[in-house]
Image (tube, rainbow, N blue to C red; front, side, top):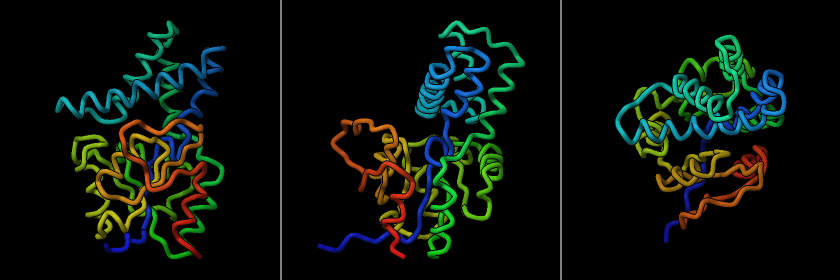
Length: 227
């Protein structure tokens, strides 16, 4: 039996993995006291649900539009008075999500070790560009790949193929990192070496597939690339 391929490059999911999608809860709490956490959670859940619904139905809409639609649904579901000003503030906050604190050090260390690191995300190119620049990661991430050109969302196999085509490597030589277990499973099915960053201590998806490894921090990425 052939030995497994060793990763030579790494691709990160963006939202939830590099950027904390629940950091919008701080502003949401200011706008709607006592409801910020619930709003952020329901907003995220509905955003992902809409990507699946539109992708599977062949009715693609850009991620930014689905993010806004998810926010509007969450506010209606929680009976919150979301006016235009509050909506704009929350959406602008989504453009500038907080990065997890360990990320810069990990990305800088990967660069120092000669490991190419990029992004493969559901996000629109403009959204990703703003988020990467806002976090100060522009010199640490290349390529920044968006599914937008395909008009399909993960976990469609074609979306994961963007990474192998861009990097010119077989999937086993690319480490795909996501904090979303469903995303890590989809990438595993495609053939990537995978790391699920399980920051919240959640159970694994019950689909008879495990990521290559499960970690709790982005620092676990460095174990795949010895200094």
